[in-house]
Image (cartoon, rainbow over all chains, first blue to last red; front, side):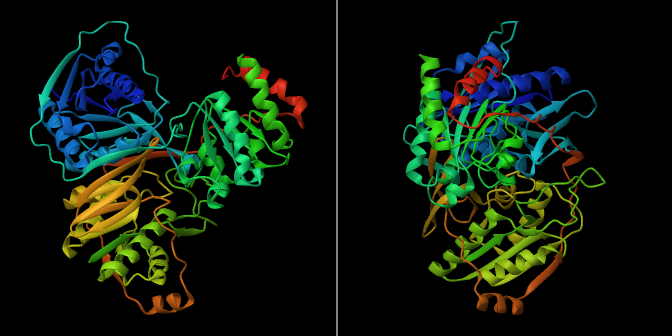
Length: 323
Length: 248
């Protein structure tokens, strides 16, 4: 079988991430068009939920296994994906557009002289060749891109493509490859988790605060609302540059581009860099005193009022609704 | 220590993007170009590395004559010399990385810095590609860096936390906000930069592996509604989120 589609699955702390299932479904779609099959590749040690992927219609997974591969190693992972490419003669390699995917995909891409299309948000198989759409300028524009290369690397934005459970159950064959002496020239020696916090890049709901909150301590209003919603806390560049919030929470062109189901902007006027980073959210709520603030041009629902009064009331009302 | 820093000349993040007539690029009319914001962290770290270990910092940019402006900016911050790898073609990330690697490999740099992404095409891959073409190690998205002898320790930002990464020289480091506070170019620096050399070289021609067929604006969001101006609007908002949007 030549020209297979390789689905590169990502595990963290021995568990497959949700985006891996999306990668499998996306790979299945390409494979169906090309009349070929998907082969999964996973690198790690004992992976608890590896069998879960059989639900998504994949029948073969190469598992490169070694205790020292639980944490990411750019050098070892690149070598092992390269092994998989050589063995399967893959044409397409699909990754999640995560911190790991962004690091690994181009490394392997360079090694096999592939073209790389990063952060794909939709794909059109109608024509030949297929067109992959990705945002540029932090989402201010989109480009439809095609490959001119034989080998093709694609990363897909998490939470955009659905993981589809296959109607035809497949028997999953996991081929374990015990790896001796992995190349650990570059390796992760420690993972420092941010204390109990959801990450804006992965959250389904985000509550963000900006300069309208006036002082760092007032972010507790944002945090309280985020807590009742199970949401991540985000921040505008103004709030980050003022030192009120850490950079990892920054949403916008020099921060993170996000597309959650619900984005609540509190005391954010909506500078163009911020709008670029969050306009693709499914629903946007804006709370801002100034009814002419640009944030209201992208908001589905707005309250043009005082964030200090509205946030506590909103938190209470949602608590009531959830009770 | 031989240090290189790769810089990119990009539209200011405040730019309102207008699609050009070819429908493949933005319309550059009226657009202000700046040094890529993430590359400022790279220049700063390169200068700090030189201050600690001695040596020389070379800034390299791939682009047309306009990129000299961004090289000048790096020189004004304190970089020793600039190299412009000149092309009028628009290259994809693989093409740019090959051009950079071709130049870098001749000079045997110990460490190469660049921003973790450029704020135009947002690929976030030029550092990783270049490192692989060079056979160097790579740590992307760095928010902390320490070099001891041949050993490199960095922290990189990932979802929900940071990874502490160990590697060794020679290495490509891509820089993220939080790594340092870029210095401002002093008046003296700006004056001195005018006397510094910018070497111009043609790039090694490559073919693009990917091709933009069309650039377009995302579908405009339907204008929403302002449902109130005080707390009395809150119950209505919650009802809409629950019943209409179905997101809570």
